[in-house]
Image 1: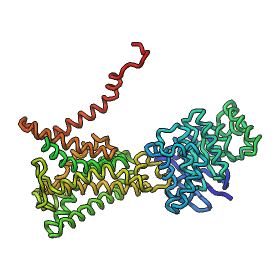
Image 2: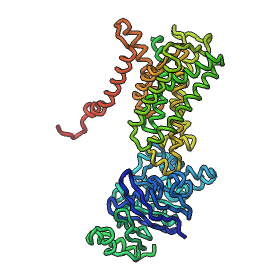
Image 3: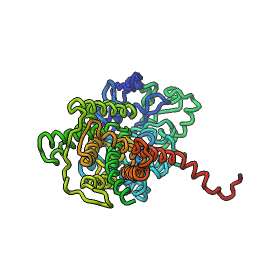
Image 4: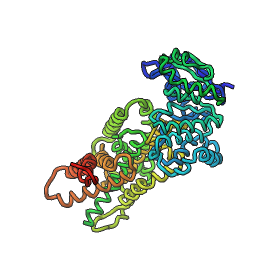
Length: 256
Length: 299
């Protein structure tokens, strides 16, 4: 079943149009990756899905319903979760307060579900349980990434939008993050992942949507991608595309 | 000395309540509001109409004043601030100057420049502390300021929406991404700020007993300075700022009254403000220079 669909979506800022007609669909339970160079419109695609940059034309459908005109808050209430670029945890609030805010719509619907949801998140991310009273701003980048993911998961969303999660993280923290996102993937939640680090992204996603100047130029399951296709559709040249080769071959060699 | 302290604390409460309104709005929205003084004065005129002209009880007048100031804050957010969501906070701050001037013009238009008398609520109940006559509203001002400054933050942390308000001051965009309606938060903050402006004016008015256009703006300037001294984002800091300025001002008028300095209140306020800002700017450098050199360091 298709969970999310974008039909010919255009969006931008002021006089600048960034997305020139994005069309893509995301199947329930799958991980969709959106890849492209700087300025290709990856993050704006994510914001058009989340509603922080509203679509100027076209349609965004979530669970078959048109949500194009809904505010970001209402989309969250319908089952979208966000792991925003730069993580954007609330630095002066504790880990537990961040999680409580993450569960805002869950708690409004049924406060009784919060306790089990918190326990489940603490089971998946033991480090957050240990640091539940610590101010989020005093944790390491990798731990903040875990918190950002946990804050989205605790609301029990149907779809999680993960925007450039590896940006600004050290190599060690990136490994930590890779494990965290694997936890999300294993939980069966549908995910849209935008990532400039193509090798990092390809190691996680099922389907890749390749963007150039605000248009999806190629969509394929990762198992069908090769260096040539990446080089052609991303315009990055074969040398750079070759750097993603190990991620692709690793994926082809595994069922994950 | 006791007299200086009592007089200082009397004013401190008023300054602190004004400062709390500024901090509340600034924390959540990043906008410095300059309309607090005039919103407060408008509230006093509402109370004047209800109490002096309509002969209603003082408490009814006060409730009317708070209702109108809160509604004005809400209307300002709904009709103007919300439409400037993409504008930088300085533009919205300028908008608050416009609001203040508009209210001032309305005060002159409807009530003229002459003072209007608004009787205090509990005239007979005043008492003496260290030789200073203290009225119940002056005590109330200090109690309200202390309760709001030190209690509001704790109360906010208890509810999800309150926590959302605290979070909005740290990252407004992220608040929307966890599903909290940001527009409702800003509506509450602007209404709350205007409510506090009305409250501050109501607490100070009985000391003077009359209202003139722009009456509360003079006090608001000191409140604004108190907010800046407190760091602009800290509710307890706003109260501390109010106390510092209240005591500095009463000490100056006690010990410098012979110097015949015109506008001694403002001179004192701005001297303290300047000293605090200079200290904040220079303190890191001073600490670095005064700190002992680490062992093994060479010149």
